[in-house]
Image 1 (cartoon, rainbow, N blue to C red):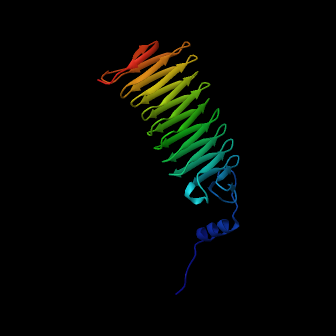
Image 2: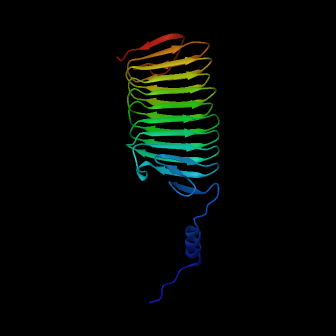
Image 3: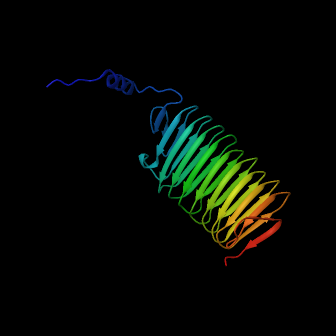
Length: 220
């Protein structure tokens, strides 16, 4: 029986064997283009990197996403630390401790179910869905943030535009000219100061209403 290999398949095999790729190509971490030392990996300028933390030997994982990169990180239940540099596009999916920092001009989409997430968005566009408890979330320097957090969250929106939804015992602070729209699913406190503009929707309200100073919501 004769086996036929198409020209396309042969071309693919030759490229794969050569192990060569260029900026913009999708590459795996660890790999030749995405070097890892222990549990720490670096996605170089312009590459599209994918990291699955289970592929690394050791506890936890770290990924530095260089300027202009695209990074997708599947942290699983491992502790996860991702730095998203300027103009990078980062997606993080995690179940354990999560620490994500998004620099100016970047775009971050983070989904984490672990407690004690530490998420920062500086001058970037961020969507943070952190359903665990005791999260600390910061948006500043003209960032645009959409935040959903579990109970006992601390959310700071400073000189940024933020749409925030918090569960029981959430604390939201809006400062330095921020624009905040806050939905409290249960008891929460919203502090609106330093020329910030705030709209708050408490449990039982049909829509957000403007507020100044400290505003407390109580579940009905």
